[in-house]
Image (cartoon, rainbow, N blue to C red; front, side):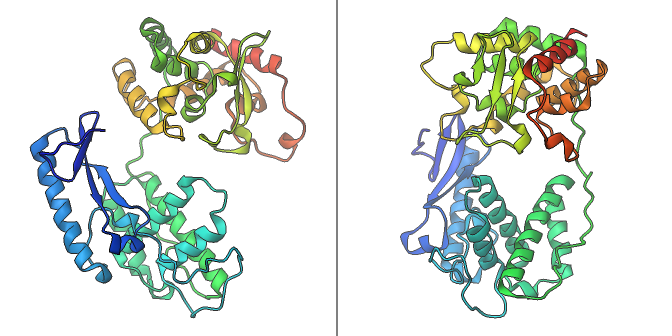
Length: 393
């Protein structure tokens, strides 16, 4: 991070300009952060200066008229959730209150009761999703929101260019907040954010599996370049692991001195797992075995397998995805991404007629039915045998 004194209210990171403005001390009670910072998406100093000046002017005006909540300004979604209606007591019972609450208060109730021991993404998603509603429809009492508000909210998200799947996820969060809070405070209402039509496929592109010849070509490029980023790609290529699962590994999670080399996928404080079934042992075969060996052979003094993506106390899978997809783009067909390795592995296992239960166990997919939850699953030597078969074709 470097500060450019010639461009006010900015700093640079990897050549990209970021806007930064400290929240005045008398307004800190309204925010959940002491400063507002976000990327200006430019490496040009003149462009950054223009955008930063405009943002700073908007903030100055907004701070002057803070109570009106009418301006659409940078950082609005970071506004601290109003906590006037919540108790600071650790007692989770709710004190008597007025017949209804505002949406900002509803988020505070929702996070106070349901947010314990939940990841930052849970809190961030609730605040951001409901913040979008407040941006479009204002911060109203729950009973004052109407179906026209909900459809206007949907249309605003479409205009922002969000995909149908993203809009569906945001609406799901808003519905949960409204339903939960209404139940907690005893409000009887029809949730206007339910039953809103959303085209889930709008803007969504299918994640295509990598063809076998392309996959083999990418593996060869990884071995040719032979650095930590390419080790991560190769590790995924013959295991079908999720990118975040691999990026957050410790070196101790990789076990090679055994008849069946494997990687242990388990939850860590810096990287949570997607589902309970994601915790598993994955056989190391082919290019993934090569990559694991290269990881353990490096002498960088870090306990992490991929230290560059674990420098902030939380695995930065987004950074890994952006960098690796950019590198891989010239070698793969359109719509093929890092996640395509996971699709490819599933297809490769199907091609050798691997039983679906073994496929699910290898990939950490949720299995259907009560019976699949009994026992410890297939032993590692069986998983290794099927993994070997899959990569041989």
